[in-house]
Length: 317
Ligand SMILES: [Zn+2]
Image (cartoon, rainbow, N blue to C red; front, side):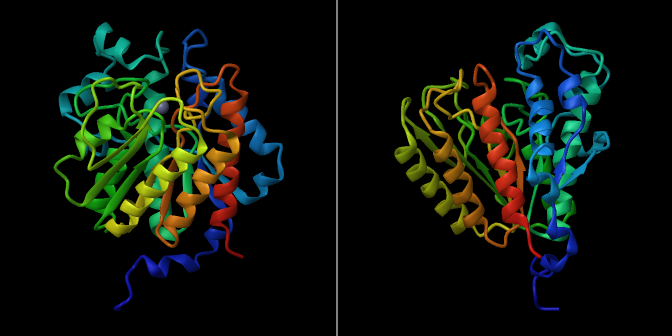
């Protein structure tokens, strides 16, 4: 029994398909008049289904997350008030996604569980799995912010450490916005390494301190961005994680309305390949993250690349 449990996980037949978690509430739980581009989830699913890549994907429907898992990263008062529909107007506004629908609570619960179930899946089978939503890195312990209610990265990191036998987890956050909530929640957790590559002048304007922050100047294109990503991945590899949580936001694209970076579609694709390559045999979970191009097509192109390339990377025959 000297081999690590991780290395035994890769012979599973489940590796022939990429596990992707999805729920119709990802789109339907957001009000049609909300500023957030809610259609991106449904549109991306349609595109994946219309392409050959769907043969390499197994779609899973998450069950709503339980309160106990949320408490791994959040204060009970905040969790209970959200689940009871009792957040104040100010708290809801800080999260955004307003006006809230009656399904907002259930949407949040299935979205969080999609990440948790994908994490459990990769730790059992190895390879790559993903949640087609989330990457809710702006949620803090006792408040939500920037389209994020609860922090799926922090909940999954703590769940993996507390319950799934993981000893070291790395959070690689390549969304154009800093992973401020994740950094704060996991600040006193030496078994978790938080790494954030983000635009230096973008939201959140008051940055938290990650274990490693790698800010990129506004207007930077592929070369600077990819060099910085390589640096981030070297840090990740040196940490020797046995689980990697990848916040794969594509809002660094030139076409993004909120991004302020000038990364091309091809550059974004190279970025993902660098992450897959650096992960090697370490189980990897893809969290969707931000993407706000107007129209949404450029974001969808890059999300399509992300999940179809993850499906290719995951495959063993
Ligand atoms: Zn973002």
